[in-house]
Image 1 (tube, rainbow, N blue to C red):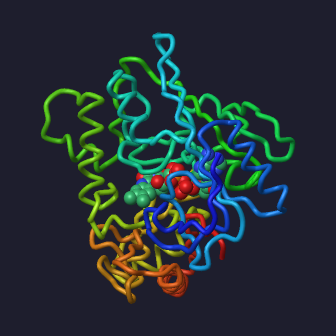
Image 2 (cartoon, rainbow, N blue to C red; image 1 turned 135 degrees about the vertical axis):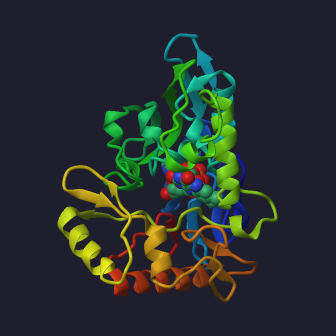
Length: 349
Ligand SMILES: Cc1cc2nc3c(=O)[nH]c(=O)nc-3n(C[C@H](O)[C@H](O)[C@H](O)COP(=O)(O)OP(=O)(O)OC[C@H]3O[C@@H](n4cnc5c(N)ncnc54)[C@H](O)[C@@H]3O)c2cc1C
């Protein structure tokens, strides 16, 4: 395995910012992953695991240790054909390639997650979700390298403790596991999920139930309109996706804020989030705090098509992106008393 030095990281991210990695190892097998880990340990260097770079902001000074890019391909397969076929994919497989494969095989469960950039291995980390589906609904097992024991283990769905944009991989066991492979149990000939309002609107005038392929196409079209689909050259898509999580607040706080907002002639949108809690759309909070789509701060800005996407308009630095993030967080805190949490992982800060 080739381990390169001083490799620029910006081109490995969708946001396109960040300095170099001291060392960079692209790993194509489990053995190479272990080799790269041992390389870092032998030099007492920190390790960062890189997937598709679609949920990252890397600091301008880069990363002072070993960046281990997981590129384990392992073709996904559906074996054996049965009611709940298993799709098993190497962590380095492109996520949307796997989704396309499941839809082509007429298997339901991932169709609403079409068009999300990144790798298969990145999806369990923040329990990727969109348009009414989350990977936690279909993940059967996650094959990992435990960095404590250097042993390969299989984690069940329950052991991953998935909740909204969260799992053990980005909370309690952060930095402990390298994900090597993920298996998904899908529904052969199952019906597509059309629960999300945007999707229902898309199909409002159609007759009959949409197919899995039609739902996949609709999701990609809706994502394209919001610049949530990576299209080369589309400046509004040069982002890390939604920059802030939708805050989940206690019912009592929601009621108090609703009343405050109503006195200004506005209605606070919200969704159920379990007993005694409501989820608030971060995009609404950002826009109402005065940060409209198209807002710019130097070379960083807010996408013209999505209030939650911070974009690199060309030549932005990580410092520009973080300055805009800070400004938005301060604005929302001041206006609504809510501290928005960033969704992307900040590396090297
Ligand atoms: C345009 C756009 C739209 C997006 N839309 C959505 C959306 O609808 N829903 C959503 O949930 N997300 C969305 N995202 C965010 C992002 O695509 C997902 O979080 C994706 O799963 C990240 O995967 P990745 O391989 O790119 O991970 P990276 O960005 O490379 O890494 C993210 C985190 O995961 C860790 N990681 C990655 N691979 C592994 C591995 N093999 N083992 C252990 N840790 C690993 C990294 O260390 C890091 O902490 C969007 C992003 C963009 C740019």
